Image (cartoon, rainbow, N blue to C red):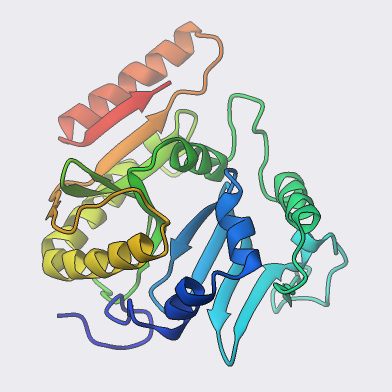
Length: 282
């Protein structure tokens, strides 16, 4: 079993105060978030809550002597750096979001700022991966979680898995890529023998193999929380773990060329030869 320490996913607690208070009180700000069809809500390992707009965090909510929420300063319209980082880059911080005075207009402004500051190129052939992710989540209720992180095993390394799907009694970890992503083929400049996507899917496979029971217990608890807060329409309480991670590639090409056809051919050949469970989706 995974040690009960910060960063592990054994800390999640369906009976945590934050979830009980939301269910009992149903605050006005919570109703605003849940009624907004552009937004989706994920439960985190430390019993906090993230409200997302296409991967951009509209609010990170905790319960510390009451509800507390934070949002990136840029999403509140403050673009002025607050000093420099150790590497000399502009420093930006998170500000408190007043939930009690939260208005529909504030949410509209935050979404607008996220779109301008975080989501790039959503109208062309290489949209931000987070935009693709958010689009899939808002269109498919089978995705019950996103941005799953696990950093407890140095052999595996740091993991951040894009999507978690629960469908037909099976829970699957899903990696997401756009068709233009360079990690889907060999990077000739770095002369890699194995494309990064193969290494990445291998790490996910190792993670599932080592922690299958822990994963199942964690997602039972997460599903319990989401069901109690009416964040999912899935009623299942028992499910099996898909022992093979999935890969979804979104084909965002608007026009095909010979080079693009060759690229897709190469990607298909690579993934099939490495026995990757994948689909290329338009």
